[in-house]
Length: 418
Ligand SMILES: Cc1cc2nc3c(=O)[nH]c(=O)nc-3n(C[C@H](O)[C@H](O)[C@H](O)COP(=O)(O)OP(=O)(O)OC[C@H]3O[C@@H](n4cnc5c(N)ncnc54)[C@H](O)[C@@H]3O)c2cc1C
Image (cartoon, rainbow, N blue to C red; front, side):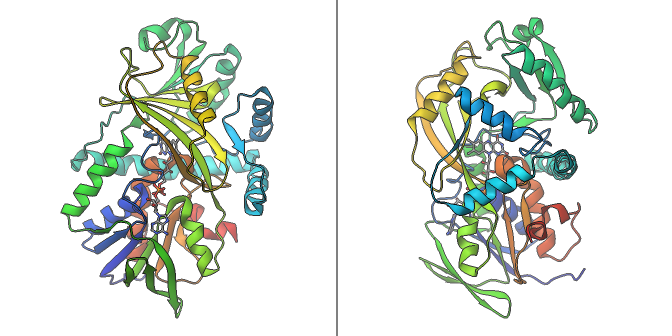
């Protein structure tokens, strides 16, 4: 592999992925600039649930996923909503997703997700301990909570699968649940405690990381929207924005769910679509959980921090709108009421929606695309952008410098969509 002499890099997108790339490149002595069409950290990286969910090796597209979701849709308990419209790209994506719901893909994706998740865990450990990022970080684990006996018992199969990777959780029977997590209602079926997982408050992480990188000399251009890219000799020669034209040795495209809108201008289609999620942030309730709780049957998360408390979840395939559907917010509140003694904290801090960048095989896309020699795309992190940020940032940095990456990046390459 040829080592490269790179002096400067522009990163398009100031989300958690853009900042992670900026972090490792700046550490390697490269002059880095980040441009964002809004403010840094205001995309999906702002109001998410903040889990560093390292045990989440199973892809969303698993055998039976489509049928299970259809049943929940009919019962009115599905967190999924697909807006009926004429968006052909969305339907092609959904069809490809359905095709991936098989045991072969599940096995292969779990192995590949495991590799990048464990790599990210190792890097995040160093990152969070050596960098003074003030983000309410805790490594107590996550609690997957079940209201129904049947789903609780069925989940043992998933735990068996995880045990093959050394990631199995501890089974918490109903009679021990109240002692372990007094904030949960009595009468729930049980839970699984996974100590491999951590959590942090993402908006604090983004603010703190932004400040840290600025101090290290990373240049930020906010309210700077990329409008076009000029190509010559298979290279990005210029980045045109509403704030002028920029040039650099290398460009990283980390614009989250909006990334395909930019590659589209280059005639490159990417199978990434926005998956909208919602969250409600409040002050901590009097009886606040100690553990982040995944409320299994409602497919949502309750995250407690020293400084706040958040309910988050839902998956809407409804395009790029950032409107807040009140029905989705009510569902989050109702979901929390079914599991928590004190589901609501006051006052309310924020109601929010964000767009996850979703690939149909539930794996990130971290690669050069098309024939472009000086651009790397880093997106498609779906439900795991915060968790995979460190691994993505370090791998992108190595790719840019022409160093061998520390894990095999083939599974996350753009060739899989060719
Ligand atoms: C409800 C919810 C809960 C979640 N919970 C978790 C969790 O617990 N753990 C986890 O790991 N992940 C979670 N996620 C997923 C995670 O939030 C995303 O995967 C991650 O934030 C994606 O980061 P990103 O940097 O790719 O995108 P973003 O944070 O969206 O950043 C992209 C940036 O690009 C900018 N941009 C777009 N277009 C342009 C342009 N033309 N010019 C310049 N800039 C542009 C945007 O303004 C934005 O700031 C959750 C997501 C949601 C919605």
